[in-house]
View (tube, rainbow, N blue to C red):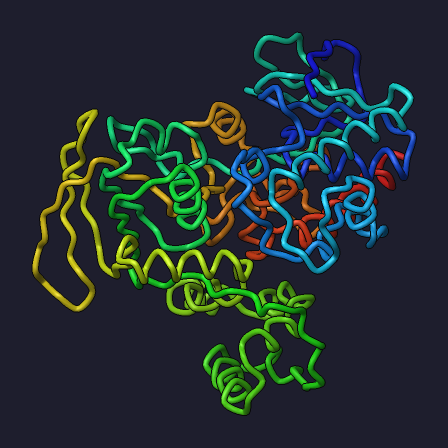
Length: 446
């Protein structure tokens, strides 16, 4: 799907970013209002974003199909689409992310058709957003300015770092592993979901060389059970009160009593944001510093078949998981020199790899090297959240400016709001947020 419509005629709402978050919001607005909407996407393939632009069919969703509807009030929407798609996937399956990308693109195409011209896609990079008398004006590279009554930033993820020779800071580009000799050595910085994506891509193209994955603690995401679990009947209300230490103690007690991580995570899944909002700023900092890595490996689990591939790569000696610190040395087009200090040791180990890929995960924090961020910071319209995880937003997702005042024109959706929600990277979370943001915008513009 490619669009390059002119941005000249004004709209009610401009959505900056045409990945999953932006498409989910556009679909809600079309279904529930008669508002004029422009979806502004820098690339030529709206609907995909970082997660769903993959071509690797071994990259699977981390959630079963039954929980992956894009529409909060249509729980069977994705399952019904799969049935029509005819590829043989059912509600309990972990579907390839590339197929989910096709689903999102179909949702966008259907929303455009349903809108009768009220929704259009504009191709270009938004570099600035200026206040105007009755709204905002967006500067879009390669397009005339776009005027809107309100704008929503749904800008998604940025790569962990920059490329330099054989060091690749963007793990989601094909170039990250392209041209690597089948027997070449590769270091993956990070051991979470992004590392697993790169590992699976390597294995899919037949890579046989040594793969080292390194992180501070060397923790790798666990796998889902083979079949969906029945919801356990356990009272978890005591996890929502008291100090962080008290909550952690009660959490561990439930695990010792036999509930198990999968069952407990399933119980807490709908209430994760409530848990987060029940912590004060100091408790949140302590959680991120000490507990987050263990939470993530159980919370963000992989499909069973992916877990089997990881175990097989470790068993045959191809994949090594290392816990420790790393320093990047000289990087040429063919080699990267690194220094590794393993956890619990002071010994500095110097090694050379044919390729290094930064897999530490996406960035969402304020970055003045991004032209739009730089302009909004300069104009006092944007500031980082207190944890520097993303953009500071109010309860209605309004962007908070330098003086602490929420905007009545600019809003934020998806991963850039992770400082407020922390759990806002998965479709089940974003679809609820998209529905709420749409409801608020429709009410404000009615």
